[in-house]
Image 1 (cartoon, rainbow, N blue to C red):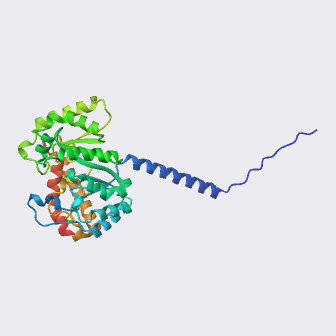
Image 2: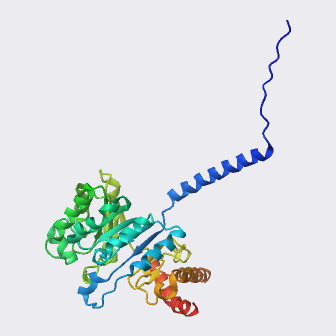
Image 3: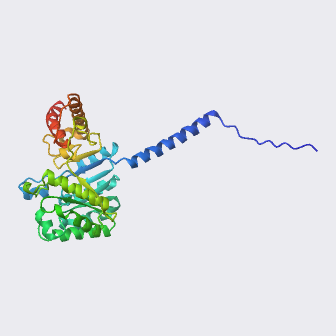
Length: 356
């Protein structure tokens, strides 16, 4: 009996179909790679000060509130170029239409965070954002000591602010919103940094940032000297490495000095657009250290697109100046990178505003 031969019939696949399959797989792989790098890369963010009402007690009389309509246009335009997170700074709850700002932010799918300067307002903030709390990344509060005496003396806050700050931290943490704390270190509280970290740990704080930059209410006589600052930061780093608890994560925000001509003005902020800072006057700039500059591009005068173009030009001019200084081997011992950018930007902004 002859053996049977079995023939498996394989459906023919056209070369065009194979190409389409490869293209689809390549697109899927590219998308996965893109998403991976997006997660690894810090997302660009907006920071906006929507009112100056919190500054009125410092001698400024004219009230300035950022228009809701312009805010809506701003977040739509910036969303197109990749922005998806936003931080409200100052004391945004004082804006008469703050709830509308939160609604527009959530409607556009932005994640937002809030910096609370006055802890007595924390319940008002909660009432404004609780319907959109899934879009809230964190609250940032300010702490300046381990007790009411030190906290109120450093920040010149009214009695009870320390208790309200700790109460707010507990409240937001209990309601599922992360809390970050900023500590302004000066001569009055720098020896308390360990105890402040332990206090934040007990309160459930997520991130703790130490800085020696002056707060509005601080006096320059309390500013740490360079030697004291370096000593303090060295001790903080040692403590952060050896601490037994995981949270809060500890960060240090200090001036970055230019040590040699190779790293003059080496700053990751000179990359359009990693961040944008907007004030209640409509001024818009790419770095938070340059917000005090006069003549910043203004969205009420130049429009959103025009301001972004000018910001790119400012970044280009700073990079040109940097390249020239490197070629000439200029030295900048003891100069902060932020000061370098500030001086260059101060020269080029008037020229760019005139040209545009």
